[in-house]
Image (cartoon, rainbow, N blue to C red; front, top):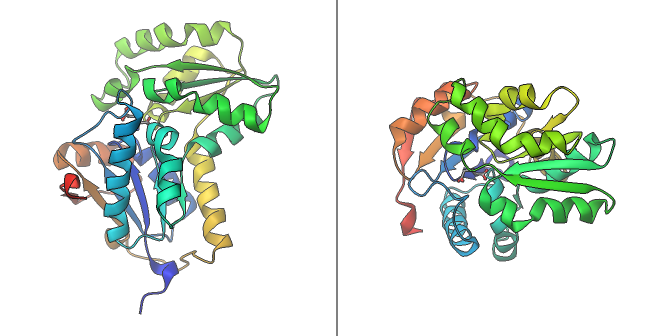
Length: 273
Ligand code: DGL
């Protein structure tokens, strides 16, 4: 019989962005099995309403529970912002999002209590980062800015394209002027633009990628609940990828950002769940 610690961790995102969280998990939790689901048929979540994002997130959670995962990671800022509470209220399993770990890391990073947050429209509209940060430390000023064009730029492979520089300047000019000293990349796609963003903002601003802190938190939860898997595995059976559409495009992208080779991606009809 399988022990609970042998079971995989479920990770989900609206598409490819959550791979930035999964790759951090691979670094920090090298012995864990991971099942990734990218909702490529219904991406982006960042322009959708809270109700629909909660509905999608519940479907994906049911799908992952069917794969007998021991913990679920919402590797999407928008779904973490809009659906974490609803999922935690409905399902028994430990579920962790990326917003709280990211907020905590930014509080540690700021020296002048002035933090910038960039994210999707839905994340920024929810005001979640401001609420969580000020709930942890009320004297911190938080500036949030939606950068909706960053996601398609990353998805279309425009990381190095000159147009990306212009878009970064367009969105982040106010952040540069506001003299923040820490900025949260509050969308899972944005770490893929990290060096371009850093170049624009200058070295005085610390860029916080919530993925790192999230992986640390997962490690802590697994240890506290005796759920750590300490047995080394072979890559091919260790990481499994599912999407709701366009598996080939997903896989091509995954192979440009992941530290492992992604050789198979299965398509799931997520509407069934
Ligand atoms: N993964 C989403 C996030 O982190 C960005 C992409 C989308 O809008 O679905 O907010």
